[in-house]
Amino acid sequence: MTNDPALAVGTQDEGALRLQLAACYRLVAHYGLDDLIYNHISVRLPGPDHHFLINPYGLLFSEISASSFVKIDLEGNLVEPSSHPVNRAGFVIHSAIHAGREDALCVLHTHSEAATAISALKEGLLPLSQFAMRYQGYTGFHDYEGVAMDMGERERLIADIGPHNTLVLRHHGVLTVGRTIQEAFILMYYFEKAARVQLLAQAAGTALLSLPAPEVTNLAARQFNEYHGDIKAPGSREWPGFIRLLDRIDPSWRN
Image 1 (tube, rainbow, N blue to C red):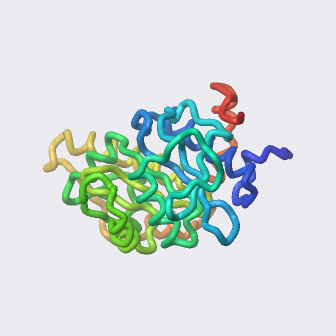
Image 2: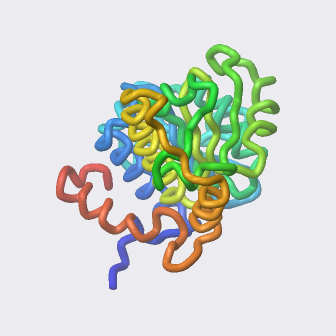
């Protein structure tokens, strides 16, 4: 047994959430899903004020640690002093989801290469692999409106994600929502993996693609999203291994 707060899946303790959010940033960097100082991962803190933590604008994801985050409210105001600004587009996107979805503890947005390529395809993510099955019928789509600076876009973002935990931002990237930080990360990890498989398959020629029967795709999607069999809440089973990986590489994420 361990008392490590980084492993406390489902916690509402700010200290533990800071550790898990820092771990999430480092994992995104480790798996090559980051975009220099851009992109954002946020976590909503407990309490009625809807405060959330987000990355300070200017730090690489590989530099983020538990003490790095900027705490802001839904209007973008600093809750605690910080020497760093917050990315405007990041605030618009994340505040929209946190305000509109009570279950959105964590919001994760990337511009990873394969996912962004998929976002530009009319058909989006196809059920070409088991990785992709979980997203079939469980993904929203948001048309590109330019860099997300307009506060009015928040209403359209929350309308387009609807009840889903994955939102494809056309010509932009992808966003995942988690009831835990672990869930948001694993949804992003497997979306990118599914996207890479699709691009590899399509490179062989669309005439060679084989799609499963719709009833099989629908069954697999339900199995993933309704946690059939030994499938647990997304990310919870893998998370201890991720924490061990990060501690071996560089434990400074805990600082």
